[in-house]
Image 1 (cartoon, rainbow, N blue to C red):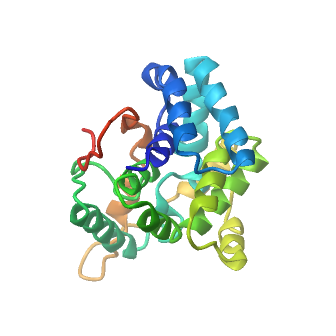
Image 2 (tube, rainbow, N blue to C red):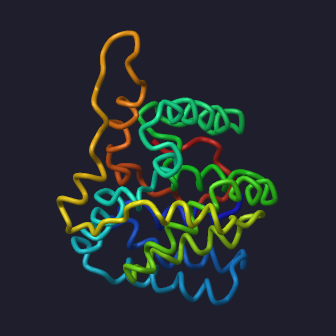
Length: 240
């Protein structure tokens, strides 16, 4: 088990009192494996410190504004590559099958492209295999890091770490294409509404298949609890 991935997964979950209390344990797990460059480890400390010492209400409000309310910062990977297209449904099926083939069973209500769940799966893989798989969405992580940098958010560090650990580095044009997409401020309600606006719903034999995916994508990512960092042996079953 690569506990660093479980720690990063926990950092991206909805903040609660239990997560706050786990910050020293989480930091120790990252330090024990020593996988991160020193500069990125120091950058990650800012987020760990903010979660550990912050007012819980403020932390939760910040999380919602960033990751639930802002589509360009969605923690669902396929939001950034498939949007509302019907390809998204098949991609979800394929990713869930990948988890199951690797021995990780997830709840039927969970979306497999949720980044903390993806990282939880990576933690169960041999490290080299995890790094290879991490390279596939590395351009998404790089774009998210840049958007969070513009907002001066400490969450930037998690995505910088993920991009750095990936076996293959993202191409600049792939990152630029994502950054060219609308990135409204979370307080700009009109822009937020426009970004989340669904395509018209059509019925009949020519109806599109993206409507259901669009509804599911709005489920609060924070409802998934943070993974346990203290597990002594790899657990191949996702927490309920």
